Structure formats: C-alpha cells, structure tokens
Length: 242
Image (tube, rainbow, N blue to C red; front, side, top):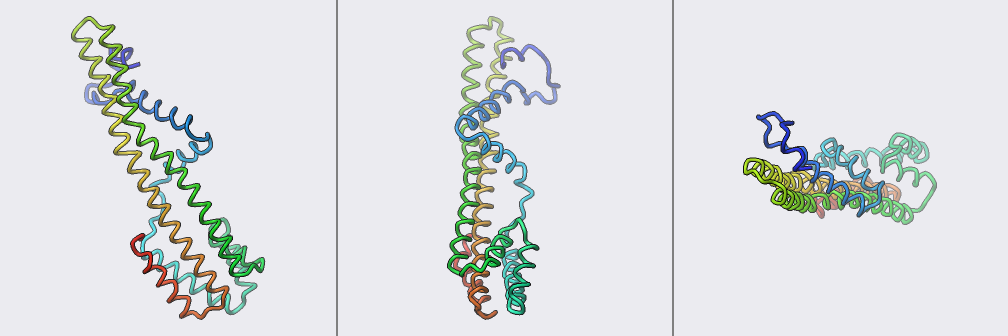
C-alpha cells in the first residue's frame, strides 16, 4: 500500500505530512490486533466508550458534596414515609445506581444484604469498565509496534523494487511516516485516553461506594448528624482519589 500510493499526488502539497497508506497500516494493524485479542462485543463497546470520553461528567469534590446533600434529603424523605419515599426514589433514579439500591431497599432486604448486593453491582460495573480500559491501553501499546512494522515492510519493498533515486526517496518518506503515525496515535491518543478512562472509572467507583454507604446508614435509622459525619469521614479518608 505504501509503495502503490507514492506515485500519485492524492494529498495536496500543504498536507504532505498526511499519508493515507501509512495511516491505514497503523489503524488497520491496531484494529486487527484488538479484535483477535478480545471478544468482538468488548471491542465494539470500547470504541463506543471512547467516543463518549469527553462527554463524561467530571466527578469533583463539589459533585460529591452535592451527593452528600442528596443523601441528607433522602434521609428526611424516608424518615417521614419510608414506603412512599423509597418507591418514589426508585422510580426517579431508574436505570441509575441509586435507583438500583432503592429498588433493593424496596424489597425489604436487610442492610447487610443491601451492602452485599450494592458492592457486587459496584464491582461488576468497575470490572466491565476495566475491560474497556484494557483494550484502549492495548491499542496504545501496539500502535508504535505497527508503525515500525509498516516502516520495515515499506523499506524492504522499496529497496528491492526501486531503481530511481527520486522514487526511492519518495517511497522512503512514505514508509517512515508509519513510524511517526504509530508514535503519535499511541502516545498522544490511546494512552492518554486509557489513563483518563481509568481515572473516570476510579472516581465513579468511589462515588458509588459513597452513595451506598449513605443509603445503608439511612436503612439503619441513623440520625442526620450521624449520616453526615460518616459520609464526610468517608470522603476525607479517600481524599487522594478525588
């Protein structure tokens, strides 16, 4: 592919740094590698999650303080009328982690069972996200490898098939572009993406643990002051994660 396109001026002169065959070798190699290494559905999910990366809401200390305040509001509602409040909150937060916990609470599980089911749900969500992060990390690590592979393949074909110096230099430049693309795509796209997704997963894990702790305290009929102090202590104990 590198050799075949070197003889055609497909790219305008102001975009000489863009070489489609070299880019195709890197992207194609990365895609083939992850589809061979991981289940098809997991790879598709990783691609979908990567498109949502910058739409994720940032979990900041301010957001967690708002979560604490929400827990305090839930405590007041449940204290007034537990059955009606739990049913209302279960519907209001449907398809969210909070909604799952309230649906469990609505079925009269004990606080120990609520904790067990909540922690299982948290771990499952975190494990699924880590699989996505692993795929993105793998893409970042293999990108420079396929860049170098494309360059070596291009050099072999160029040195064995070209006789004119001008054509040789043109093909050599195109072949070396694969190394450049491999390094750029790996170190400036997929690796930072994987780190950010891992950070988002860790913050989400902490936030769900905080909400679970708050709802368990409510189920145990703790006072508003006890709930607030326990949640604040939980945040201080894990402040390095925020």
